[in-house]
Amino acid sequence: MGFMLSREATVDRLELVDAFKGCTRSQLKQVARLAERVQVGEGEVLAREGRIGREFFLVLSGTVRVTQAGREVNELGPGSFFGELAAINPGIRNATVTAVSEVEVLIIGPREFATMAAIPGFRDALFKSMADRLRTADARLAAVYQEGEDLEDEPPPQT
Amino acid sequence: VSSSTDEAVLDLLTRVALALAWKPGGAEDDVIVKNSDGKLSLIDRLHGVPWFAACTEEQLEAVVRLAERLHIDAGEVILREGRLGRELFVILEGSVVVTRAGRVVNEWGVGDYFGELAAIEGVPRTATVTAITDLDVLIVGPREFDAMMDIPGVRNALFAGMARRIREGDDMLDVYAEDEAGADRRPE
Image (cartoon, rainbow over all chains, first blue to last red; front, side, top):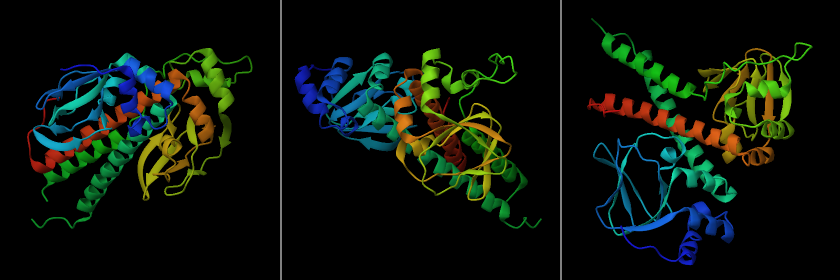
């Protein structure tokens, strides 16, 4: 893991991140104080499925691959974040995240994350992202439910 | 379709229903002190809501200032699927039934809350909620919701509740996907 850039440079970078759009520059300075900015090489693993981890990550540059049980489920680029569930509630990582290029990330511990979540701009971005995930999960579960009912509606098998 | 498949489907549906039913809980055993007239004050009622368990007295008073308390008659429809509306509801007394596309997906009671997704995102309601009994509810408007999220205990508890529901929903979907594919379960 590599070097740290100046705080001002980090703030400049944060200004380009969607999740921080609602934040003032002084709030971004607060975020930069709370976070550690690191550079990781291609192939390095940031989070490993099944392991306990409580850090929140925000990708500043580069791309990471998200895998579950060895299957790729997503690729995330600059401005994406992950690890918020573990930062909020202690638990095991539900996916492995690997750098597929040189990647610059902000790493935020759970205590710092709670402080960050109090900043209205970031808080709202976090709420929106989580509400989105909840609605998506609910919709998919409802579809599973519907499928189950359709199965029940099928005529009984001939025996 | 064999009967063992039917059982598997039924089992899955039960788990799905449980996943949908998840709401923060655990503080229901709190002792609630009644006033001399036997009625619970609003603050006393809030003590019985797990969501507000981490709040100080002052923070609960702030919640009381921000929210409106309302009586709703049994049978009344509180939210209608597909309609716009940004209020969040906390049940202080009574219970509601939650339906999606006419199917009952849940039943909620004292201490449960609903409407938070619309309060956050301003999206149409994802379910219809109907009062089963007379209800005593707290209503929080979108502006007041924002102010309520400035209270650390309230904000963190909502984040925690949502994070848990996301995890549970994802787990249910994993189970379903793996059952479908006939794949081995991942170690929990």
